[in-house]
Amino acid sequence: MPATASWDSSSGTRTSTGTSPYVLGGIGFATLTFDYDPGGKVDDTGTGWQIAGGSRFFFGGTKRVAVRVELSIVGENTFDENSTHYSATAGFTWRIGDPK
Image (cartoon, rainbow, N blue to C red; front, side):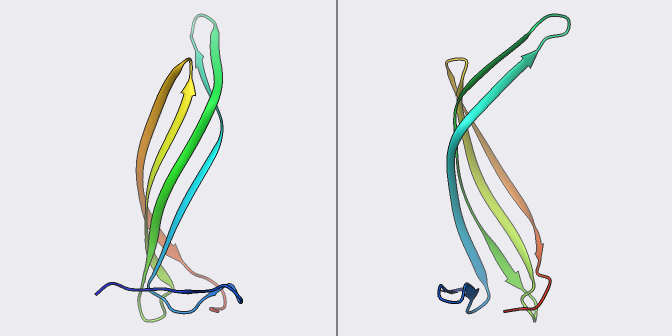
């Protein structure tokens, strides 16, 4: 059975526990540097971007521990070439402090 969560925007707290999905994105600059030994150093700066999404899945009686998963795509344009990098991460989250 899937878990659900909702958000109370007036108080900034989660109104129920279960899952906490998210998405993120950004654009900026990327610098790629090659340092040859022996030899010189070559670098280039271009545009970069990232898109990611994931979720935390809370469990346990107090819902203070979660498994976190995230998929991410990072791209950059340096040396007149486009590069794209993919990653998948996972981890654990522990809530500390007073639950709201």
